[in-house]
Image (cartoon, rainbow, N blue to C red; front, side, top):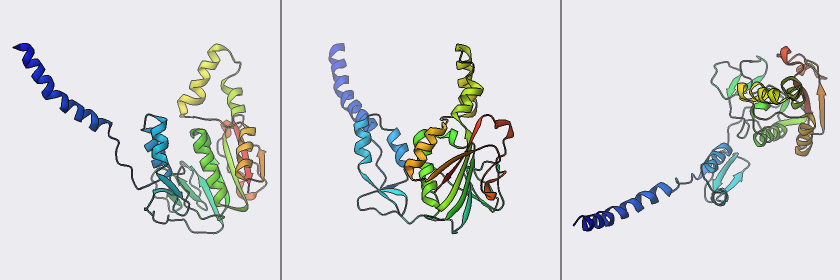
Length: 253
């Protein structure tokens, strides 16, 4: 009697379990329009590379909107910050420059500040930025994301425009945090250079040069703290305690 009841319960419950499992495996509906970061986020939730590629191939990139769209969909034109001779402070943090456009992810009520996700298409038209500056931002980005940001900066710079980066460089990181390269110092360095500050990737000078030139920059120059060939970029660096740590690079379009 007990055995018969058990078989009955199995027949009753099993179809329901199959239906539940099927619902669990069912992926969420793919949006018709998605940003760069939205698509990357969606792909990160898909466990198998074959399914990632299948999902990705549903979309086509629209340069005018900066969005990825499915066939038959059309994204609205992106809003741009107007101007034709702009100066932009990228990933500004708490350093707000009154005569510059300051952009970052957090909210701020300063009239010269704009809340922008730099990992999506930047809100500037092609060839409209004269000078750009960024201090201690690149090291917080994975390599692919930093290449995206550098390419967007190149797109929006005017011909002859200059982008200055100040960031902890790999050369300085190795010297300060991994020397001498003992077993203990190597382990301490990972905390001091990466974990404490949410740092992800440190550019070496030649790596930055390689990427910048591949993107199209015609000139890559390295300077010291506060020094630049351009008056607009002189004295912009604020972290004197990182003089021996940071790389100071200027990329000219």
